[in-house]
Length: 312
Length: 312
Ligand SMILES: NC(=O)c1ccc[n+]([C@@H]2O[C@H](COP(=O)([O-])OP(=O)(O)OC[C@H]3O[C@@H](n4cnc5c(N)ncnc54)[C@H](OP(=O)(O)O)[C@@H]3O)[C@@H](O)[C@H]2O)c1
Ligand SMILES: NC(=O)c1ccc[n+]([C@@H]2O[C@H](COP(=O)([O-])OP(=O)(O)OC[C@H]3O[C@@H](n4cnc5c(N)ncnc54)[C@H](OP(=O)(O)O)[C@@H]3O)[C@@H](O)[C@H]2O)c1
Image (tube, rainbow over all chains, first blue to last red; front, top):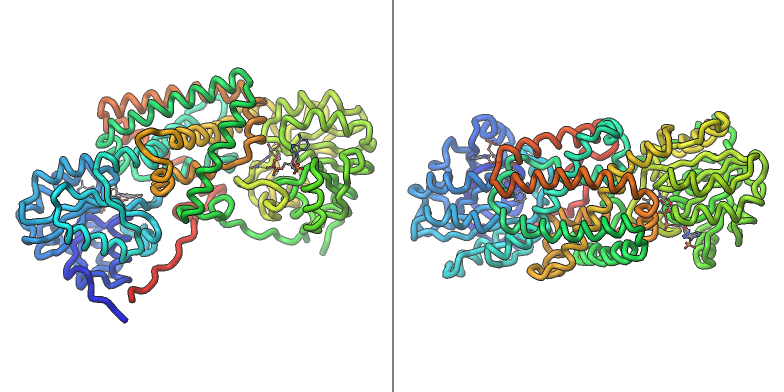
């Protein structure tokens, strides 16, 4: 049994971790009759041609969106406004225009004004990723069982929302709709603040006078190495996230700082009861995440462990 | 080819993640002629008997250390002083007494005064672990390629240090020696502060008014879920760590807070250059950790991804 592709032509602007994963998944699931792509640099376009995942690699954004039924910007948040302005005159009437940006309020503010009235604008954010980037980093399984959040403006054609939702569901994602502002609050705590904290602590460790960087690296298995993974994410992407979700991030930071002060005070006073109570409470959240399948129950994320060599 | 066991009788006081992993690894590698163990509760002792990993499960600490050549306390840091006092009269002359506590200055202060002059005291800390605990959580491969830090007091018999080092090396660990105070500084930044921060942010997320806990759990794949793993560690163990490594943790917290203020200011001002510069710098540390084999290079820690189901 087979279903017809959801879209005739899908155009991906940008082919990094997310664009490349969409291309691989959409092809594997036959969600489009044709997938075309472009990227800013000649180097990435050449590599995408070599990879042979998409039907055509085009030289410009204007050519890429030509005749496309679905256009997805898979580029840093800060680039979405200018690129939308550039492609707007070349969009087909009735096309769906979307993105994958990690911030949604700013995306709507920057993209919507440039779009002609005869296209459907359905911003999207797949809550999935890794610390790697570039055309080789994507994989078809990235979105499986992860949520993709759609933030369509009021009055968007329900058929367009449904078609884009079906496209994401076809790649294995679960689809949810909310307002851009609520998205930005939720992601501020579940993604943006964790990244900021991880970037901070890795920077702190790098500059200590009392402990050398090589010691930090050697003895990182006590917890620190998990933060370095997050702090190895793409700097351009994350700069754009913090520039474009300032208010929500600053708000969450304020609450975080209050809570950190409370725990600091408990440590200073030697208040074991307060510490124990806090540390016991946070376990329940972990359990919830594992229960709904948003993380592996395997210890240590299921990290590989080589076998013991027999004593000789 | 086979080597003789390093110790005749090894006694493990406590059989949780670390004690249970030592028992499994030492048995797999035949590092001891006999492994005996005990645990505080009847329940754990019964489970350890069932698991059938050690030679004998004893009812009391006093019985367990009888005639042992190596005694390792595998219990929370705060329990090490009282238990040392309890076992001291029953130790064999010439025995090596060690521990696995995540803090070392306090361990030396709490344990050393109780020990008779005719035993060797070699504190140790294997920098390896998972968020799980209890008798079923251990596994023989836990210490492979991880460092085990020894902090012997000045004047300790070099033969005792060497024997304990060989025992840890036999379980796959790399062995390093340093002072207790330096250990506590290094671990404050590579393990204790990361845990404190993770516990804080998970607590913050749990109490927000604007975002529900179920949203936090659903959309945790953007980074937050990595923090919840760390914040799911044993509350008793971590209470004891913070009560016993107060000064070093507060010192690292001070530096962390300064750095967080700097990044917060950059966000508030929209200083993209400062953010980019910071985010680009922290990647190098991650590279160092992967290069020396302290973490997997696989994206996302090598987390499992189910395959795409074919569209039907
Ligand atoms: N990484 C994640 O975990 C994740 C998760 C969910 C959503 N997102 C969002 O997905 C988007 C892309 O992220 P990614 O991880 O796929 O990044 P990536 O791997 O670094 O790829 C970025 C792509 O954007 C292109 N690009 C960069 N700057 C551009 C500009 N100024 N104008 C036009 N194109 C530009 C790059 O072209 P060249 O290759 O030619 O330089 C590249 O093809 C971002 O908006 C991010 O917020 C990321
Ligand atoms: N978990 C890690 O990642 C890790 C890594 C390196 C070092 N360490 C250190 O290893 C030690 C043990 O940690 P773990 O992870 O193995 O803990 P665990 O799995 O919770 O096991 C703790 C063991 O200690 C016993 N115990 C608890 N409180 C006690 C008390 N007051 N008196 C006597 N025995 C007591 C428990 O007995 P019952 O089962 O009968 O309650 C249990 O057998 C700690 O000092 C910790 O700092 C832990």
